[in-house]
Length: 107
Image (cartoon, rainbow, N blue to C red; front, side, top):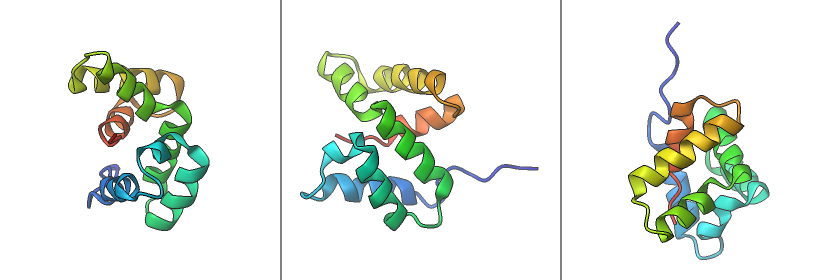
């Protein structure tokens, strides 16, 4: 049985961009699991897989970890790989899911 593609229509990516670009929420929302839960359930009602991993990423501090590593001079690709590996090691999500979530964390 083939698995469904991750975020086939880029809806999760669009939702994250919408959240970050909204002055009422901004990039700080990416690190707030309660806020992400409320926003994503409204923005992505038909994407429970994507919602669950993005909430887990918020709980794990993925956006903040990426921001910290990049601010210390690490390039975005390396920072994404390191944070994705850490996320995958600390959650039940497969490594490719961690890569997807970290690539979506805009700051």
